Length: 348
Image 1 (tube, rainbow, N blue to C red):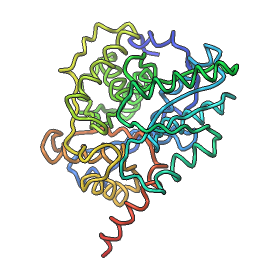
Image 2 (image 1 turned 60 degrees about the horizontal axis):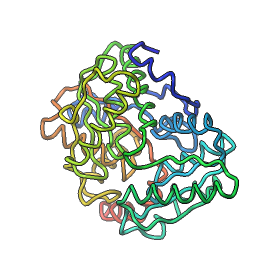
Image 3 (image 1 turned 90 degrees about the horizontal axis):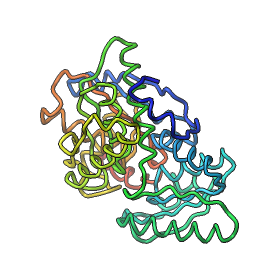
Image 4 (image 1 turned 180 degrees about the vertical axis):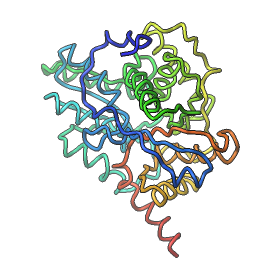
């Protein structure tokens, strides 16, 4: 462990993921965009289809086990990758799992509600709880707390993984570490990167990567592509989470604030979990040029943002760019009807 990240050692952690994940070149897609493109394959973290949340759950579930918990509670969208992986991690540790599914996508069809991550949640034996509000994090967390109290009254030892920003961002520590991992992989190949692109939603992957890069002396931009809220709200959220993470690892000296946060919402409309033409193009280009599969909610939107940055000149031609593939692939099947409609129109 490099000394700048030694403060992480005091936080309980359980190893769940296959790390280091691969760092793969994407020469065909890179050539089409006029950049040198590399993919950090955090879709390959293992554990029930993998994804970025595996790194985060190593710290949440490490904390849960250290506290003697036997039941995990978590909230997320109907097609949340986080809740699916929390269920998988809990099962590996012999814990019970309760999942609260929030209504964030107003045009969800029957396939959306039964396939993809929802099917995997059920296969993992999670107890599912519906929650009608999709944009009220405080209410979602409060509902989890009520459920946790009820379970405790029945003799369980619950552990709540909160959604809102009023709780420590333990999961972000996974990406503080991941920043060092990917830079070591680059150095082993004899190069660094000119910038990183990632999806920015709960903000822990974005903030953790930013803190990790700065803590090891890397000044490259971390381009966060907004997937849930607009740029102004997301910048504030990432800055807050980053400051908290820096303090948690005793590196408040890196001095991050909102001015250090790069967040873009130019491909976000019409909102969370909804397709647009830029996302469709990104999914198609990645699949047909690299056999790289992207999901409609996170990585498809993040790649659309990368493409938009290149075309606008925000990412310069010839740059060596790292794309953080955060997984989410089960959601492709939940969006099957909408993707099929688009593919049929292309074929026609």
